[in-house]
Length: 324
Image: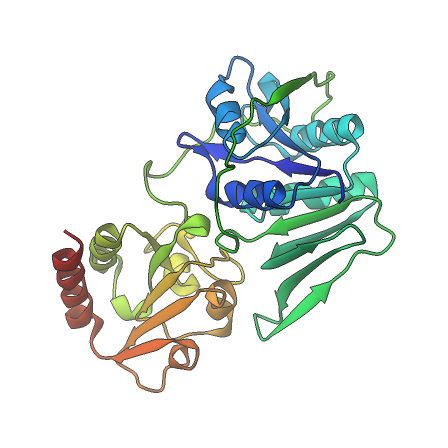
């Protein structure tokens, strides 16, 4: 099995779901693996390292530096390259997040290797690594192998693999890396974050999305109520994000976020190709639209032809009755 490095993303709740899926895969097939944590000087990684141990991780690389406090492609690429030189992996796994899709092509160019992103399945054997990923806005799926790539870089979509902790937790060995002085072209002074506590779209198990059929930004409250009852997240089409109804961070689609929830509820969304490309990996799709000819119904598992202003509140009340 290939020697594997898992790039670990985390937030204030711990190791992120997409990374946990990869850690589960690695420990199940008994790969010789390492985990990587990047962060600011003084950051307490002990809880995260303990959490990694619950997935059977035996070796953790930790790189702490003031310039790693916020994501910066220059500093993070250098830190990743330093880790690669230290542990010499044959395979690098990461969740296909917005950050990873910006970061890992830079690393791949630096170390002259191949990278495949937005993968929805992964097969690892002693002979090869084969992944599948959607193409042409989800109209077909490509099986991708690596040729002449000394290190294979795979970015997996979240919600594709099961999460299961190791039967016997480990006490990871911590390997500390020191980043040399860097002549950075840019520095990140601060990050203005959105609302804290909401579920990350890319890792949400349930998403309620709205389109122009909502009529205006004030009506997204209907979707927020439904998502709150279901424990899900709110998404949106490109049209409403461009109109300023919601932040672009909520946009689902080819130029927004690619999501793969168990349940995707599309409210007042016609189903343009750009939007379908971002949510076609959903397990169950429920479409609510008063136009019976809306393209979204061709992709939907279940369709409700009706006024969303009547249907959504009824769904919210029914789910609230069932779940509380």
